[in-house]
Amino acid sequence: MGKPINYWPDRWKASRGTWWNPEAYRAWGRATIHWTGNITINGEVIEVDAYGIREFTRYNEHLID
Image (cartoon, rainbow, N blue to C red; front, side, top):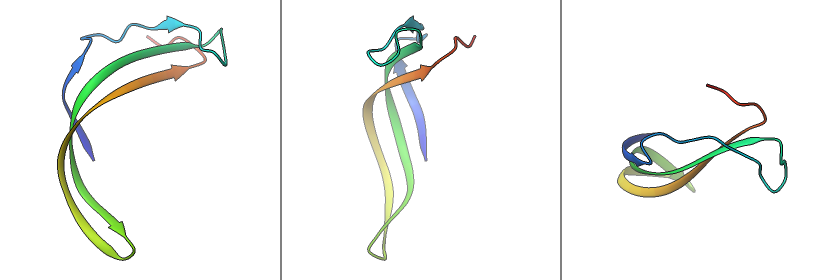
């Protein structure tokens, strides 16, 4: 599970057009996330408590307020 600590820009402004759909809408931003939970790999359970910075893109075919 991830919980945002902070993000930039303060408001992710929608822009029109992507390379695969020029009529769609997209928004872009960065966020610092605090990740917690468990990951299971080959039967081994690993406890997660980590921070990370990531870029995110939101995409939709229609503009949503």
